[in-house]
Image (cartoon, rainbow, N blue to C red; front, side):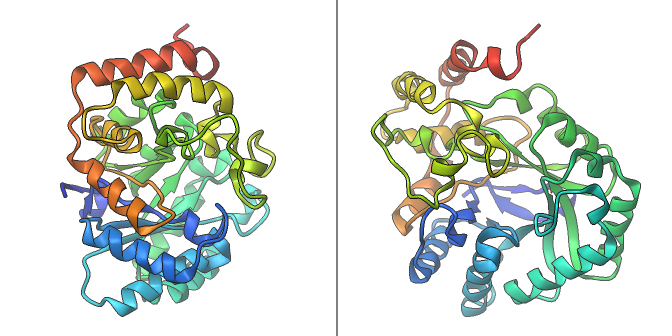
Length: 326
């Protein structure tokens, strides 16, 4: 699989990585044996980048990755975790003391002395412009607890603010065929500043897999059931913030664009990797077969016609509500 340098980390990572929110059981239950199979299938398919967080299953996702790496010593895998959602979301909670506590917990979960990449996990907006926060992160680097740091954001203005700070190695943002706003400013700014761009929610929480209908239901503990209106966290994390039934109509249009031999999900993932400035995209997988299929998207060619079709769908269905041109 193609490898790209993840911004200021200097590390090569696969263009298709693996998001592991689902290994923490926030998408319905995931058996831990199945979790290990998903990680193994991803690596066998060329994936060299795992993304996790300390709150995914209260550490279950990190622990699953830590076990996998301990059982498979010598793998060249970059693991990015996230921190900051273990406390009330107030800027004053983003302190060096709390950072040390959270980082130490993640190091134990992942079984490592030094974390490859730690990302602030969608903190309150003022945190992105706090000099004290970046000083604290720099301290963790100097102490050897982390190698690099980045941010995970909900909004484009948050990404642009983080990119302005010299120590920011990466930015993670929602980007998919139904969420094009980052293309305008964030991707060019990240590329110019040598900041890695990690694209999350690439399938709009599964909408772009083409497998859902109006009759589809989700488990009670699945965020696609309980967070459609943003009751638990930012609505953009669930179906990329689009109305479910409107999304189904857009999917029907998207399926007309899919290249021969590719699935809807593979085409959606491949489209993201084809965008200038994207380093890696992190689809999740509920089983080993999905992991292999997602990784195979790296080989799907995206034509200019396909790209134009995606942009037409976005303009027709979503732009007015998300970011009008005027």
